[in-house]
Image 1 (spheres, helix red, strand yellow):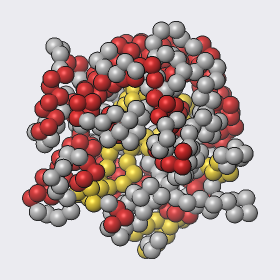
Image 2 (cartoon, helix red, strand yellow):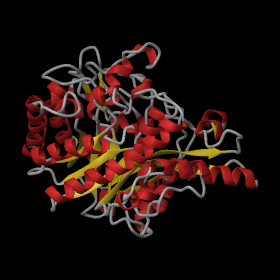
Image 3 (cartoon, rainbow, N blue to C red):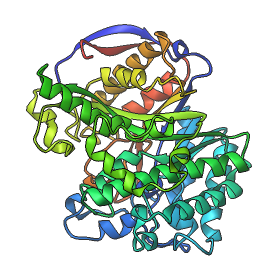
Image 4 (spheres, rainbow, N blue to C red):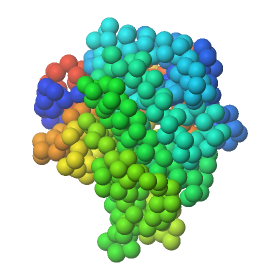
Length: 463
């Protein structure tokens, strides 16, 4: 990849002493042990077992085996000087049927993980829902069934009561725009449903559930920091023609504003996406007030930007996007454009006055990684992280709210429909032997977090 590299002094102390540094994972992607110790099936367990749904027919039955090797991986977090570890709880491990009898062995597992983090001086941050809905609930309609609000709040209550004495930071949901859009509209993620009816009902019930869950946490854990996370991509029109500009605004509303604005009391962005008006058929008395919650923080997760041109099929997002591989731009293994300025733009965009604190709860890149003489020299990932962090610092220095940064992800893992092909980890995993190798990017992050002043290459000219 061609880049104009310049040495600059780049030190974590420039971000401030109270800036939170961390790494993020998700239960389904790392735990394995899919049917061990009483765990029930999730929608992803069922989805990955279907032919043609996952690249190369991969599944997450074992993945990184974090369920058994959590101490080894938390030790590696400690070795990398990472002070904060964000991970998720598997709903089906706690409640195998989604509701009803609690699986104490599941509770015990997360108690062990939490306690070991604390023993090692690492702050655990919990995501309550990261896409793995219990399959028994999907048989009842999943997020398209309004009853999911009560199912979810009961689950949140169990998590709060079980772990709230030690967990300060809570994220109610992870990227609702992705699991509703990919899972209930496009059908490319679990549970594989399609169509506007499924999508709109899932949007509304998810937003109501997110707020209801947050209210449970606030009631039971008044001193906790309660947040939730949203995916986002910087959107630009292909040209300055009015049709492209309008299309870009519409895609921005779908990808970046669909969930955050109702939560902030601004309502769904119906004006910019008129088809969303149909969502009103799913409203019941009191819903408008129950869409809003005063979160202590919002997490945003950015990787790239998207270029949008007018399409007759907009708001069908994929029809409006100009693929990055067709634009002669640097790419990751996910075929996402490497565009560091996107994270600056998203921090700026999400600096709504109603938001108290903003964290980057995911950012990272998948590149081809190879073991050579026992090492993984992932220079492109190092450059990526440095370039994006430079943009985070730029936003902070300009006065925008941003209070922390979490790398996606700790170890190479199961990347949903892409299986094991893309590697995002700071740590390389041999999925046959479960050997871990800290990559050059992991070593760089560890050194950066020591507060040493480093002279590092940072991309110039990528905005």
